[in-house]
Image (cartoon, rainbow, N blue to C red; front, side, top):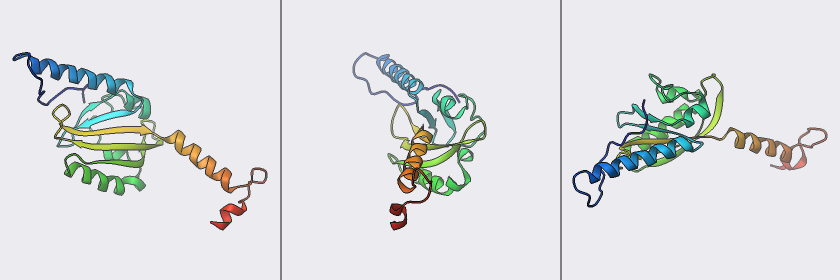
Length: 170
């Protein structure tokens, strides 16, 4: 697992023989800078599903360093109850160039706990600079917790904690 590296062909115009290499290097630098500064984790897998790139966001979200996934199949990080649906959606994306799905699931952190996550998996095998499957992982635990608390408050009396009439009607 390494830092971003560009493996495609740059279609730059002009600039002679070195022009394409310069465009490719700039594209790789931009990709790397974006991947390292956003709060989401970015993982790029090759067509054979081996991990080629991991951003520092993976450490921030899950506690795995950039080499923390070495030897671990990413599906082993998913909660067992979420695995079948995630496998189905992943197979759809990996078998169809250009396809993309958002997978809502729980992902195991390095400390063994799970966080609620939203994983956007996109097949970019046809993209010359990516040439792989791009996974953007977002920790949505805080949003999920707020949603559950709001739902509970809407369905329960604040004073007694008992289910209110609106929850019984549904």
